[in-house]
Image (cartoon, protein in one colour):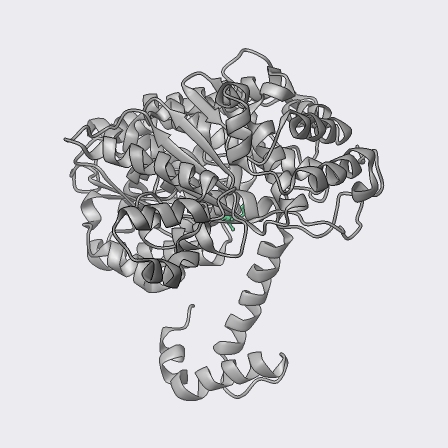
Length: 560
Ligand code: G6Q
């Protein structure tokens, strides 16, 4: 399905928003709050225990109505239904986009090319349950009869970030005594430092790669295998300590992994959307399959909310439209993610890939270069740490940075005053960003503190805050596997809706593929003697410098 309008910026819904922007751009949120005592009630919505308060945004009812018109003009609901029903909406790779099928808890069949994919999904889930229970119960033993104590996930990008954020966030649900490590970087340091913490006889390596060809993952997998063989010296032992998660069973078998210990998934699962598939095996091992299924349940509930709730109350739709509002009408270049939860420390990293790899595109679905901004730069850090680092720029910098603040109402670690302090800081920041501080207020404050008129005049301009900085607050009862599943799915759908509005394919990643190919070529050039001349002068210069200075070492360590 092509977009109904050829030129998005000239479309009626876009033009109406542009006009509306001119009318609202100088209105301050503090006045909006003063005029409407029910602003929180009017601009907040919920699903289960997750509440989205979007009242601290530069919007009024008219803004939301016009944004909804934009969503309808882009046919968001129709595209959503196409995705859920297995249509090949990933047009450049001719693939369905069915991460939602992986968490389909209903008995509804979902078809790809006429074939119901649900039996295959259920079979893999059963396999994951069986295997993870064996490992966790101690029934699965290493080659010398020792119990598994360390899970090492070797993968990168989508085969790392999803399981990693979930394992970190769900620590309170883990079984202590079974540790999980994530190795992704081609830098040997990542693997070497991890291997210093584990013993071969109690380690289980999960080689997670959709393609089983990704350079970094294969490099780490082969180096881990060599480490294991050097210490154990028994080829047969490998099958007890290495399992694979991949769509490429043949290559996994060639690596030496028993087919029975290979967990399958499918090409209609995008890498960055794959934590719900067997790529979640490390999650199941670390947290147990029941918790993994709760995560799926939470995501399914968000899917149902996204599918069935009118756009006006639909959390991912609202978040997506607010993002478009700032990205395209206020020219905001970035969007910040501030989880006020130490467990969610890795959420910004995960969302960076989800959003930037999905919507960092310049060519639209019709093959034309866009003439509007697409995906924002996603960044952030957990609160309260960020407050002591980059929040200064949010409060008084020159760049608009809309932000999401996420916070649980109840802590997993209710220790003394900690959670109250955390919670009050979160609210204080969104309040300060919204309100700002007027000149007169700053003067009054300084007078109250006993400063003289001269002292006040000297610094007063620095103590004024414009405010009017937009934030969403996402509050949920407690960070459980189910809630986390819902939050991650919420962001997936937000990114989807934005991709539809910007008329881009959120499900390919040609930039990633390009980098993979070039790295392969340069690696070859590094391992042959003599200068190279086949690149640009910068790349030639750097390759030749590296070879002249260190060729012996490179040669010695080169891959077979
Ligand atoms: C995700 C991307 C990318 C991918 C990695 C790992 O959507 O495609 O991050 O997940 O490059 O790929 P493999 O799983 O094939 O090793």
